[in-house]
Length: 101
Image (cartoon, rainbow, N blue to C red):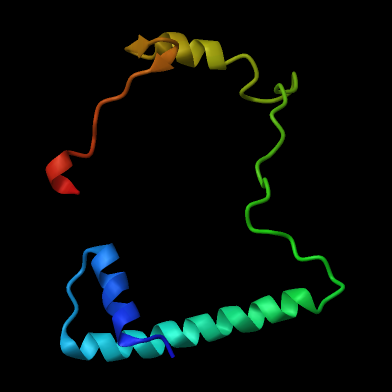
C-alpha cells in the first residue's frame, strides 16, 4: 500500500490540501490503481498478441481533396472571407477570459 507520506508528497506536488479522511481514502484508491496497472503490465509481458500503444497516430492522412468533394476549392474562399488574419493565420475573438478559468 502507498504510504501516508507519499500521499502527502503527491498532494504537495499537486498543490492541494487534504483533510484527514481524504488521506486514508486516497491511500486505498491509489494503491488499487497501482495494483491494477501492475496486473496490466504483467499481461503485456506475457502475451503474443501485439498491444498497440496509445500514442500511435490516429489522424487521417493529409491528402488533397478530390474533385468531387463538396469542400474542394472552397478553402481559399473561406480564408478570403475571414475578417482578420496575421502571418497566414485567421484571428478570432477571445472567448475565454483569464478570470473565468
